Length: 249
Image (cartoon, rainbow, N blue to C red; front, side, top):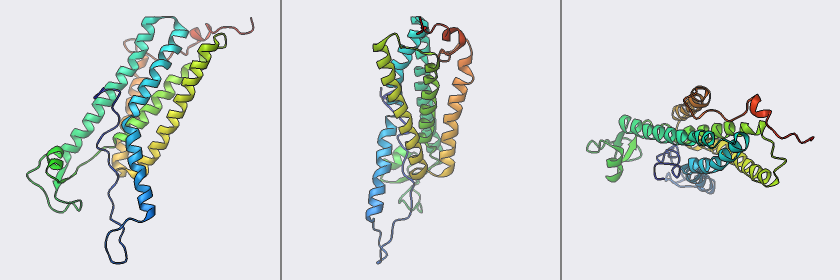
């Protein structure tokens, strides 16, 4: 989806600007260390743009398989899969809001030095089309999305506390493979979060992005999903736990 799971974090996240490295003659030059480090933000941006897609398509079979195995209720599984729809809406609304805030708070300049205004370009899109440089409050979509995705994966994997697939070898292999993939993905998102902390935005922009991600997680899994009119939490209560196959028999 262009505006759905195939998308990712804030597409306008950009590395923090800093002064060029000056050589002996006073000109700007990039040494081997700067060149090597410059590749990391680009790599981070590429993976984060696909963050929601990876999270979506790995959680989809995991939620469907584990929830159906425990409940044997197709409607209940479809209801639980609604968490992915909610996550897609959260991602789209928040990143769109971030872009509007950046557009509303910014100005267009003629150079990266941000010294001369381009008055004739009132929006970021017009500014870039005109060859200008836009400077606004760019809330970190990376920090938001990586925080939300990692916490969502951890919440959904809590179902493994009450899941016993020992009597179904094929299912055991599938669930274990998804668990390993989701665990590895979570580690990647944590690593990318730290890369974002080093290479992207300033402190306030990263702080706001992280707080939005935490708020989205708390508002869903710690508040709304506790209500009856919601996708609900992963099945992990005592009644479901009692349904686990007894391997001693």
